[in-house]
Length: 198
Image (cartoon, rainbow, N blue to C red; front, side, top):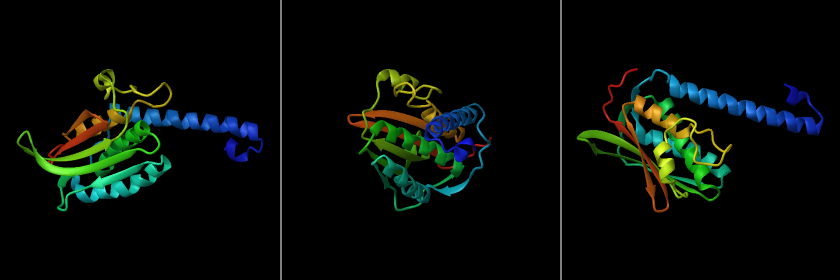
């Protein structure tokens, strides 16, 4: 309210800084609550093929802000799974944002979907791959820890991957992280016939 009514440019600048930090604190508290007390999942039948394609369209707008590209590869056939589409979208968005921050300007991010047998169970796999710098062994050991960030102090809240991990495990799935020669690959594995209830 003060910012809207303020006409002095110097005070506007200071009020804008206060507002940004207040919103940052709000985001951190919301992420902490999601991790500590995740909402009850509203599982429903979902075609992941359509959902991933929609994500690609939405997140290309986000990628444009970073002068980056998001490409999507999906099978022609539907991949049916019981998920909370809203929560799963939050999990995958956290991976996209993490990749955009890691790759910087001109980054390349690929989202792919496939269906296969994992531990003798029909499984859907959503893969987010980027061409960023990858990560160290130390970062790998703490990559899902809340408040841990591999970026310099003040650049990340440290909740992106822990939030993703929490949502996926609530679905009875797994998150697998791999360091590539050029970049990082993070896979979300979801059972095709989920009976998870929370």
